[in-house]
Length: 362
Ligand SMILES: Cc1ncc(COP(=O)(O)O)c(C=O)c1O
Image 1 (cartoon, rainbow, N blue to C red):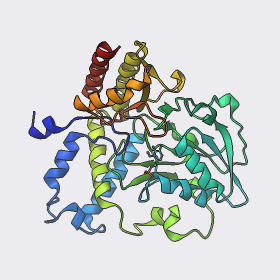
Image 2 (image 1 turned 30 degrees about the horizontal axis):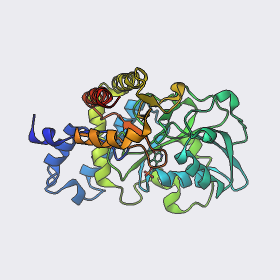
Image 3 (image 1 turned 135 degrees about the horizontal axis):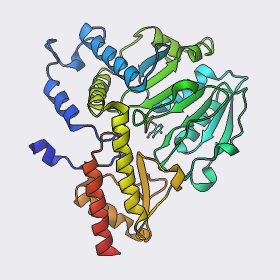
């Protein structure tokens, strides 16, 4: 084990999340001098052939990993996923029009609030009445074909819920896939746009990947502010992109290919989640917070039957080298974020710790 390996702890951070060690080490090696440029990747022009090659490679890898045809634009934008909450309706919701929103958590609510500043953000279904601990049954959704699009959050980072079936809707889908992007395949047919902040599954904070289908792009509103018009970024490199973040994403994509691409990582993700949920379900001491059919494979949220012991659990876990298990401040409890780059070994160490903690405190 290298000295770096031995100092790295088991990281369950919800975001920015853990990155593959091999990617960090490769980036460290290249930090002062990138290739034959004689400078760091952070110090060269975003219009240089060397940087353009990085973006081209990142786009080609995303295209191939997800099976995106040429009619999909792949954009690397700044402003975080939160910027997309506004940019999507600004581009695609006419001021006298309507768009559907599935309210399955705080991020979805924030996206909906931005839509309401522009046009009619119609609530299609909500699980707010039950602290967003489930995905509403599609039977209960109020669909309307007049919607310009239907927006949903594929994985709800705070509540540990995730959509598990393709959405059957009668308008283009727009998806905030920030916390499960590239963790499983996407059936692309119905989608117009998919966005994801990089900092959970595919890289560091600072870049948001936006996939836009060309025929959906053509439906956008007129006279948009230049920087907020998706068309600007699809047409050319308009301004300086977040170069270092894109560089890191490109490395994570290569790593993902080495894991067997999406099918490979999906199998590992399923295994990690199954082990952890089995550990929770097989004990009276722990209890999962999301309804079983809606459970996320990325963020596993749970509580202790004796909630008073939770701060002790989190403290002891940290002493044991298990980082960032505290649930989101709005819901409390515990959350283990087990994104693509979280090793199976970390999940096994967590489960061992949970069993041991139960023995000592149960
Ligand atoms: C599902 C989801 N959407 C959006 C966001 C906001 O992302 P950003 O901080 O990049 O704006 C988050 C952050 O955790 C998230 O989990």
